Amino acid sequence: SGIVVFLFSRDLFGDRAGLLSLTLFSFNPLFLSSGLLAWTNPFLTFFIVLNMYLFYKMLKNYSRRLFAFFAVTFGLAVAAKFNAVLLLPVYLFVSAVIYFRRIKGFTLLGLQPQQLKIKKFIVMSAIFFVISFFVLWATYFFQFTTLADSAPPKYILFFEDTIATKFPSAASPIVNHLVYSQSLPFPTFFSGIGWQLFSSTQSVKISFFFGEAETGHNPLFFPVVMLTKTPI
Image (cartoon, rainbow, N blue to C red):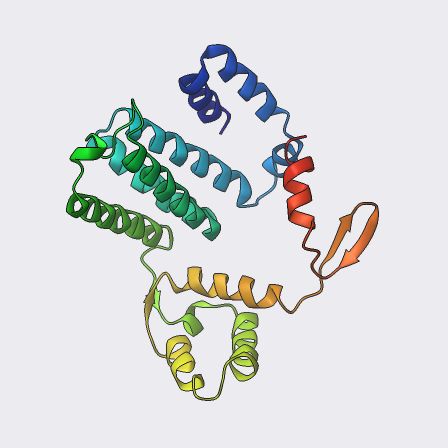
């Protein structure tokens, strides 16, 4: 990750900025604390930074090889942790700004913004998603089965309780079909997302905020963390 941080910062602001960014990254306490543990966060960090760097390189000097590598690393980022999909709205926003503002020095798929046709953009986006899809599927060894067959036993009990309590009775047959009968590519990926989404709403979490231990959700927690802890 540090090498990519250095290269990215050097391309943007020069050698000194690259070294400064690498130094700050190397002593980042969050990365140091998780770098030696078998967590997905270090891999997520690497693939997200690499994917953003490749996106920037494509905007400056597009090539098919860069595009393929960009799609592959996006699939690997999502495989590391599903919230990497949040990169997509960022890329769409940046592309829209370049398209409508005609920012000098940047291109879209190797073309000047005024030359880009919507049809080509849609086709290339579809190719991007296909490549990323198969990369993600490959990380699960091309698993193709039902959610119930792929999930650990504790997930099954949780899904049964969730279906019975969280969904209206009219939707239960559809949900049951999706969980127990419908085969899907990489179903473990989706069952993990379901577990995180539904279990996080039921479990009691304790957070330390302004010198006090709190349970539940404080709407100020993440804004304050982003403004203070993250920059520090």
